[in-house]
Image 1 (cartoon, rainbow, N blue to C red):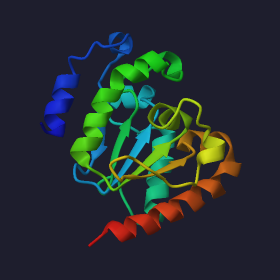
Image 2 (image 1 turned 180 degrees about the horizontal axis):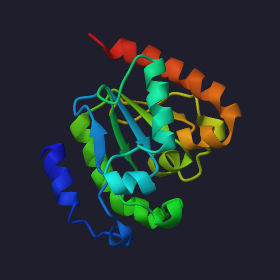
Image 3 (image 1 turned 90 degrees about the vertical axis):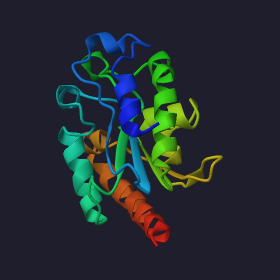
Length: 185
């Protein structure tokens, strides 16, 4: 199965109530063989309209963060925990996330990144532990059972709301850049 086939299958998905309100499925975007994968929470209004993750203000900030470590969207792969917009941009429920996680796990398997960056607490709590706290775990390397390095950091939207998070995110991305360089031939 390819990413395109998986996305096509997902367009018919009705595993949770989020499918009822979606304009477009927001599957993922970027390099299908990326060494670096970023996982956020879920689509907002702009993403739901365009069908592309991280295209609003938070996405523009993410683009600038990537540029600061000499990467672009074409170098990485970007996805979300849920693929449909929760009403009023609320945090996806655990039930909604659980319905989407098999698709996300398959995306991770198909992309096969060496590094995953978890953008925010929703990604951290759904992929690592429901008890995990981004304030305690950001900036620390974790590792999956399959050997993928995982770095939790603040979501770009959190940085927009609270500029004091800029420095910690910059520090995290400097570590991500170092690890990324190690993966290159």
